[in-house]
Image 1 (cartoon, rainbow, N blue to C red):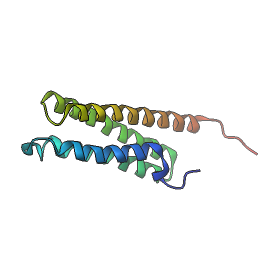
Image 2 (image 1 turned 180 degrees about the vertical axis):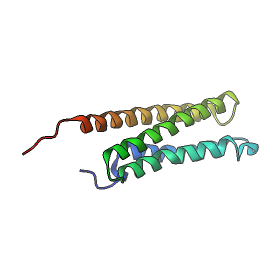
Image 3 (image 1 turned 180 degrees about the horizontal axis):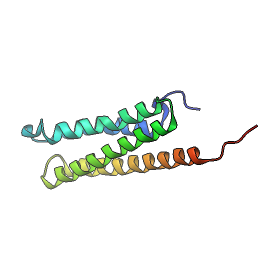
Length: 127
């Protein structure tokens, strides 16, 4: 049994992703500081934050809801990274690596949601 959200692999990966996002957006144009740079940073912080908040909620349905919020932030980040690449911001390889990491985080979140939903609908075992 996990003692804290920090033991979740998806939280660890999304936390690391967040740090990579901060590093990657340093290469963005200065005039994007309050545009895409800020948006990407906020959305990337949202992913591990929602995972942590959901894990620490009282019920599984709440947990699932926060995992879906994290997954929504993943979609937001993907859109913004694709736009950044189209606009020629950042370094191409760094953005590609971020997109690959993001896809892995999305798969992990969806697997967690599926597992939690299955556990909610499983018949209760009485001893």
